[in-house]
Image (cartoon, rainbow, N blue to C red; front, side, top):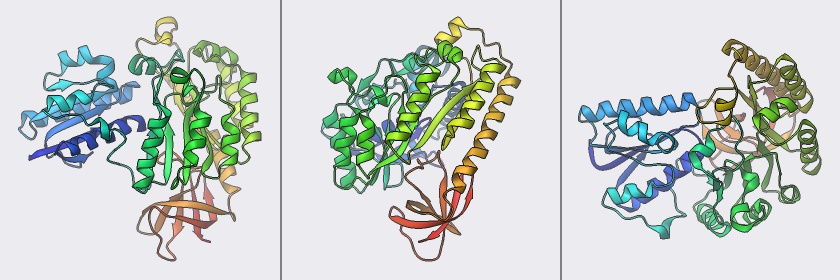
Amino acid sequence: MRRNHINVVSLGCSKNLVDSEHLLRQLQLAGYTIEHNPRHIDGEIVVVNTCGFIADAQAESVNTILELGQAKREGRLRKLYVMGCLAERFMADLVKELPEVDKFYGKFNWQQLLADLGKSYSPEHEAERVLTTPSHYAYLKISEGCNRFCAFCAIPLITGRHHSVPIEQVLSEVEHLAGQGVKEFNVIAQDLSSYGLDLYGEMRLPELVDRMARIPGVEWIRLHYAYPTQFPYALLPVMASHDNVCNYLDIALQHISDKVLTNMRRHITRDETLALIDRLRREVPGIHLRTTLMVGFPGEGEQEFDELMQFVREARFERMGAFAYSEEAGTYAADHYADDIPQAVKDERLQQLMELQEDISQEIQDEKVGKVLRVIIDREEDDYYIGRTEWDSPEVDPEVLIEKSCRLRVGEFYNVKVTQAYPFELMACLA
């Protein structure tokens, strides 16, 4: 056990990761030696930033806490603290069931941890983070919470109402990170579309992106988790006019059947969804759309699932993920609908949908063979350099494997020629 050493274990999504990075910087400023997601726990203090979104994530968080609780009993660490979404959602239950934890913090009061350690939070350094990603890219969280209250979603139960980070604060963070050499900014929120409504009375995402794009050193801006209802269409000419705003948008659509969309409380129709996709593709030529779809939601019969499959065939999403509905306690769906679609049926539908998407992905990837693309290099492996195009978000999208014909530098941009395509990766050589 190393004295004055804190291990931070971050679970869940990139939004959690940003919180962990801010905490790490504050701990560093307070004089601690810090380590993020260490291979071996060796600090006298461990902080677990938990995820509470779905059952699997909750189980991972609880199991991690139990393992660390055992390490504490064996004397391998002195203090164990827990923060984040799981703690925010189930605080009372966790306090009773996990006495080995010294203290729980929610999603928004983790600054109190510093006070409990006898240290002070430094607001003058609030824009600063210890990056846990490669130094050339970062996640940028511009809001928290959600006002949409979809029937299946527990996020509002955890994060509460939507609240935006002020524009000037976001821009200050971007300037600071760009000054450190960050070139790629992956903008994240539970609901990008609503950015600014709570602070300014209007959607201000277009203005924010436009001003970000003008900051020196910002090479790529990529947008994640837009909401389709009341989409801020003024964003599209901003995307089209700035070369450093990636032709990429992550927008979860969930389904296409009017019946299922109504049950989901998505406040959008099939026709409105199709019109949205058409306008995105028309106003931002070459855009790659990433979406997330759900199968097995209550009310999805064979007809609705067939409609979803046909939608995917016709929409031809460049990037798509999907998952099977899982009932979450406290949500509208859990309180009002019977989760009566057998798990085997959900799993079969999910497999069919993803097999269809794999074929579509292969066709779209094949179209890139022979083309010269700009990539950023993320890392070096034994036989290849691994890069990404503007259409590829870290960790979730395809990568480009580049032959080692000469020395390339991680974090730099290069033009490469695609030589071979697979559904979820490209092979290339230096152009």
